[in-house]
Amino acid sequence: MRPKIYLFGDSITEESFAHGGWGSSLAHHFARTVIERVFPAAESGDAPVAVTVFFGANDAVIPNRCSGFQHVPLDEYKQNLHDIVAFLK
Image 1 (spheres, rainbow, N blue to C red):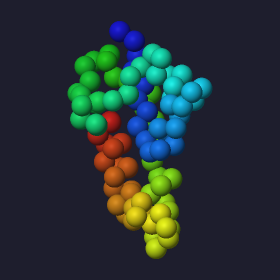
Image 2 (cartoon, rainbow, N blue to C red; image 1 turned 180 degrees about the horizontal axis):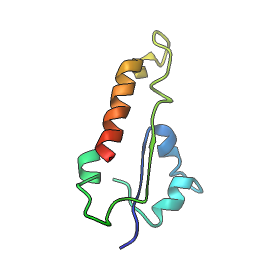
Image 3 (tube, one colour; image 1 turned 60 degrees about the vertical axis):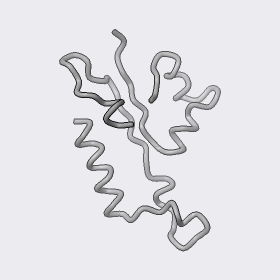
Image 4 (tube, helix red, strand yellow; image 1 turned 135 degrees about the vertical axis):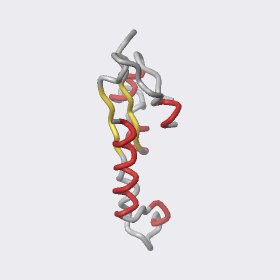
């Protein structure tokens, strides 16, 4: 069985799957698919060798601007990131 690598992120991570992107290079060997389905309880020796969590670029937009609907308050962002990391551990 090949080792697993998960790329879990926002539109920047999505763009990595464009032709020649770092995500598309990995996609030749690994498939990306939502957290509980992607990360079932790992069997011993079946854990991924690497995981990226790349969120925040869109969440950090300034509220009350044209793209303010994407803003996530800092405390909510921190909790979301903490929950993702805790789940992966």
